[in-house]
Amino acid sequence: MTNKSQTYISSPFPRRRSVAVDVGGVIVGGEAPVVVQSMTNTDTADVDSTVAQVSALARAGSELVRITVDRDEAAAAVPRIKERLQRIGVNVPLVGDFHYIGHKLLADHPDCAEALDKYRINPGNVGFKTKKDKQFGQIIEMAMKHDKPVRIGVNWGSLDQELLTHLMDKNQEEGSPLTAQEVMREAICQSGLLSAQRAEELGLGRDKIILSAKVSQVQDLIAVYTDLAQRCDYALHLGLTEAGMGTKGIVASSASMGILLQQGIGDTIRISLTPEPGGDRTREVQVSQELLQTMGFRSFVPIVAACPGCGRTTSTVFQELAQDIQEHIRESMPKWREQYPGVEELNVAVMGCIVNGPGESKHADIGISLPGTGETPAAPVFVDGVKTVTLRGPNIANEFKAMVLDYIEKRYGTGVSSEHEIS
Ligand code: SF4
Image (cartoon, rainbow, N blue to C red):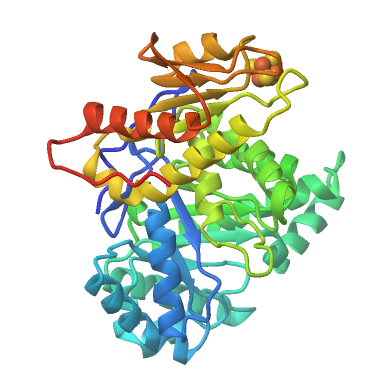
């Protein structure tokens, strides 16, 4: 698996230079496009559930998937999960998430240490007092032994309290002390940087280290990563922790990460959404992709542009059509990626009336301008900017969907016949 072929469109700002890290064949950092990753919420010891969720996340487009490795049963399950995934053709790199006893789990379960493609450790809970350095060193040794990269992932909720207290005390002694928030931000940065430096001193290469510093507030995240980006060239994993549910989580993550990505900061992202009960875990992958795609950094799925609707259109036809097409595209993408190379760059427009409909439709690869209230019941369709046909009657939606699929086949088809299902 590789992400080298993905599109990367430069932002107006130069990309921050970082050391590239190979995570099971997916490159994070360097010149590589920003990598989308996700995390399971299954019990890793439950092999069936974990295999199912990793597969779903990978099919949705997650390029790395992290799983919790919290006890012996989970560590013992990891090689079986890897094997099952490979057997069904899912080769997404797996990242093991370790807290407190990672050193012991990796030593006691060498098959797990080998099966994982990266280890994620948190310097705030890798060990305490005299054990901290020793246990941190043991994990780094395991990473070197198995030739695996490590993400040193600081989290403000489990920040190294000794370091924070030391910086707070030192701050008090200084003439113009920083605020408690500023000291906390500095402690987060230092925790990551000092740990990375220690890992290097132990022999881990710079090309095996990824840093993250997750906080739950948007302004803190922007400040911490802006600072980290200036102080090191390690590949950076962006993520807002405890982002929350639904729109709150999406907005907070997008606002903070969007600003950082625009400045060229960030080599891999995860959008940590709290799923609604029974909700779809793959939503976090979809949001990450949409963030990167709407900002013009990468293309994952064809974009369906739809107007918001207003008093000029009282029918729900255009909303239903836009939703139908968007859902059909997303469901079809795992197959289309193979069948129609480049289809992710397609733009479709579904517009609600004559005011902006024809103009917007002309700018899309294929677009339709549906009739608004009181307008002639006719829907012109534009293909590559040219009006090709006007659809009429009760079957407009299905006819347009068929035209979209036909366009995809002609423009992106590789000559291998395919079956289109119109629902
Ligand atoms: S295109 Fe027409 S229906 Fe859609 S928002 Fe604009 S004016 Fe309203």
